[in-house]
Length: 173
Image 1 (tube, rainbow, N blue to C red):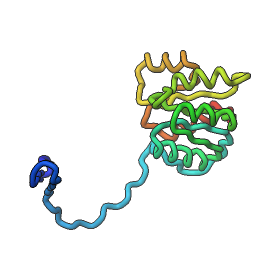
Image 2 (image 1 turned 90 degrees about the vertical axis):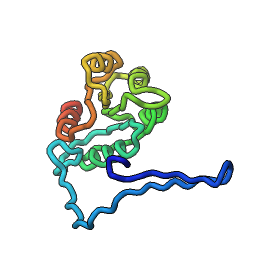
Image 3 (image 1 turned 180 degrees about the vertical axis):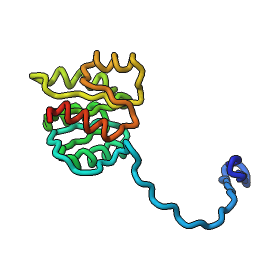
Image 4 (image 1 turned 45 degrees about the vertical axis):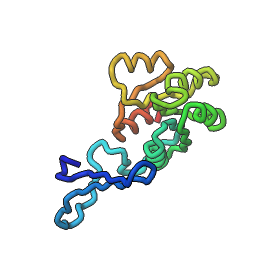
């Protein structure tokens, strides 16, 4: 607030009588609305539909990110399922039988490493490709992903072209 030349004040009539908090920010001169940004290189928006026919499971606790990713992959021709935590992802994989699973590492309840191990245990033969999708990008993080059974390791933020190329390679198309 201070950085915007504003103020914050608080008033109360006493204990148990409530409080009023006031935030004041200076008004800006009215300007024409800014044009909508166009996606830059690497944005998570496919430019043209392609034919990537694969069943993809997305497990990420960031609902918005997971849903946008699912829509983007559907645009490419993928059939997608989304889960927002590890146990739900494990159950979804049983009925959906994905060819590829994109797993966030920092999941609540059960992290992506544990989910990958459990997915590998329930799968016979090993055909599902697992991709770690994470903010952790050090070499030790990549090694930990490999040890947990991941086939690939992507660091957020995702770049759509990189993801599309990886999925095509994993799907063999």
